[in-house]
Image 1 (cartoon, rainbow, N blue to C red):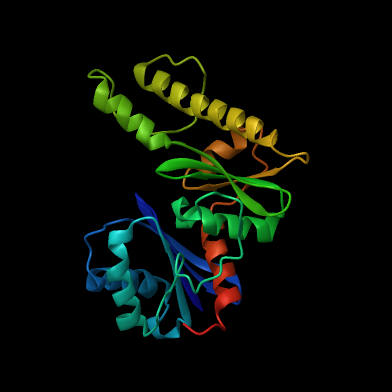
Image 2: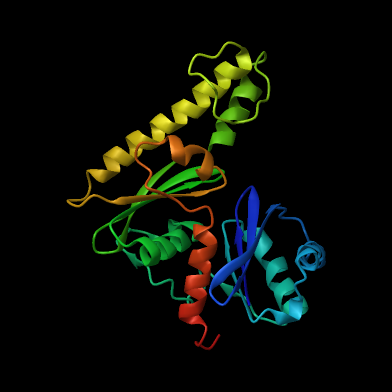
Length: 259
């Protein structure tokens, strides 16, 4: 079994693959101040609930956009799993993503992993939308090269900004409203954020599509992909666990290399 971890700014998504299939997945809050022992307690509790045993894990791979957390995770893997984790960004780990980006070091590990997984499972050209703390758009050309993309504030960031900067606006849950015309403040906020975001997605995708002579497939992932995907006119596939599948793909391509 392979244990995969994707550490985001807001949430950390964990998964266990068995015989190349994602069998278990969890989402926990990212806490950059946790120690290796605290991480182990949380992970062991999740494993115990599913009847999994730490010693049965054959390998671990991690992607992270939160550098301060990595030392604790590395120590946790070595102490509790008895494994040196494979880490995206390590020069020894080949992600198999060809770069046409001027400064590849600027690209978040999660975006590289998404690209690796999406190219493998969906082909190219591709547009990958990841609905996380930020909403990222990645463009892969017909030669399977990572070219670049766009970054926008995430949906929850937009909601927090409304709440923080407008005294009379409440905190709300993001969901699809029944009507574009809100009949209350909460419904009006939900309508504006939800349909406004869909409009943003479709317009950004439309402009990215103009970069290729072939029509790019559009894959959405991240926590809110399942909410936005069905309403969008441009999203072809919703793959909530693309990052975990990308991590597993990279692990399998690198597992026989010395680290």
